[in-house]
Amino acid sequence: MYTFENGLRKVAPYFSEFSVRIKQRWEGKTLVELQTTEFGESAAVVEQAIRHHRLFIETNQGKKKHTQQTIKGWDSLATRPLDRFDVIHSLQHRHEPSVGDLPWTVIHEDDDLLVISKPPGIPTHPTGNYHYNSITEIVKFDRQLANVWPTHRLDKATAGVLILAKNQKAGKYYQQLFSENKQLVTKEYFARVKGEFPQGTHLVNCPIFSVMSTQGHIRPVNADELMANSSTIFTRVSYDPTSNQSVVKCQPVTGKTHQIRIHLRNVGFPIANDYLYHPVNEGFINHEVNKLSCSIELELYRRLFRVHPEFGQLQSADKLPEALQKGTIDLYSITNWYHDSALRSEVERLKSLRSQSFEKLKADYDTKCLECGKQLLTTDRDLSDQAIWLHAFKYHYQGNPNICFEDDIPSWAKPNFIE
Ligand SMILES: [Zn+2]
Image 1 (cartoon, protein in one colour):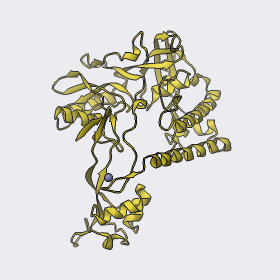
Image 2: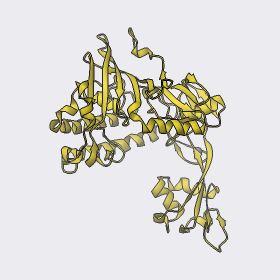
Image 3: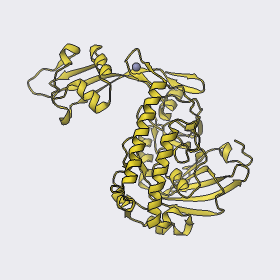
Image 4: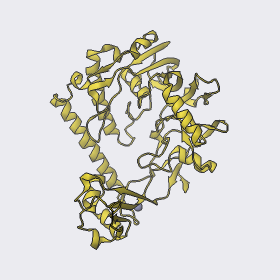
């Protein structure tokens, strides 16, 4: 299933079958209309799939006193409107993005758990276009296991301690234990940041949001009720004057997506090689998009800090209980999100930059798959930008002394590290 080339783990394209019932809003559309409008396929690709019987309909599903019928082929399906008793069957040719060919290692193993060190740049579990190139699938394959269950997750870019369960019962037990007793879970990360981080231990409490470059809206979408209690504790480990970088221990108290990266950026100490939140390397893919997106976000955060200065500052760690009590804020009104035309046009510029950059990528690697006709983007690009200096070093569940796992300290967090 996997091949290895140029430091990459590749998955050969493969067919996978799935079926979907008709949703109400799809009724009356043709298959081509549905696939192009709802799923963003090109009309030519859809036509080819129908002609090759990789996309077809079974009708009268669940309809009483009617026999089911399979309808295949372009002549029968080109203009036929979808019926609510149809089921669409699709044999899709999947092209997975490559990931780095990096080893995972065992930190601990018993009958129920397999605790591993996850390499950076690989998603925790199948998501989006990644299926076999996710760490749970890679572990299953390497160890010939029928299944593994992640009990928590790590962002794709983040490396470090990941606790997998080896059977469903343990999976369910630990998922529930960790999610229902968050206050008993202590996580420690190492980060290597730009600048001289102040000595000692500090609190950052600041709401987490981001601007989605594809749609041009704020995530999460309910930013009128944005949770204001997202907190991380940071402790300086070391400072290297030569590189002007610091190693910082990070303890996220809440667990929002990209929380550590965003908190460090917001207080002026971004992770030094973070392509999203400190985009300085022009060679990285989507650099211009990331740069604009980051500057719009920082402008929004600046508006927030004018009203709530404490969100943009390192605070005393004693303030944690108080910070966790904070309720919600209305980010839309604080940032004037809907009414500021200058801001709106920057967001529009971000959207168009994003689609231009995608078009350019397609033009650069204009090849079509002979099997399915899809336009292919390269999967062979350098993936060094996918690994950032953020490492999940320790996972400790205080309710059970046996659940305390530590990884090795990454090389970039040790003294005398030279890039
Ligand atoms: Zn294909």
